[in-house]
Length: 106
Image 1: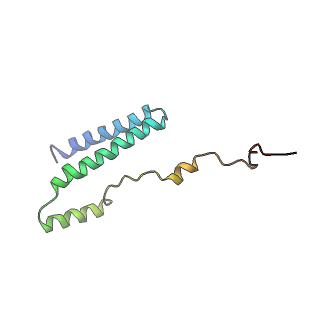
Image 2 (image 1 turned 60 degrees about the vertical axis):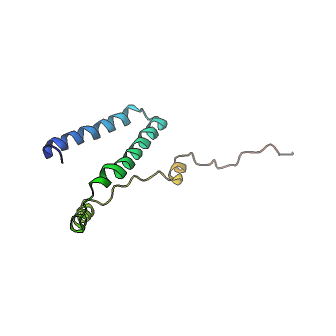
Image 3 (image 1 turned 180 degrees about the vertical axis):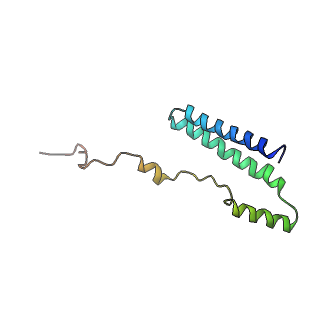
């Protein structure tokens, strides 16, 4: 890692805090929070395909050591997408009585 480990950790913590701040500043606006999530997902892909891939070790022993380290520290970072089922859970439950469609004849 560049510089001292503590300086790197401090910069990373500040970066994470800024992300949390942006989320809070969205004020509960789902479109803005979705925008933030999309950017995080794109950044994840850019880092994965760019810097991470370029930094992979070339020897089997080093690659094995990296994989062991990844497994011990929580595995591959994955950004799950929200499932439609989860979104539907936030909808109001259907009313107890069905709404008339206008075809009532009395």
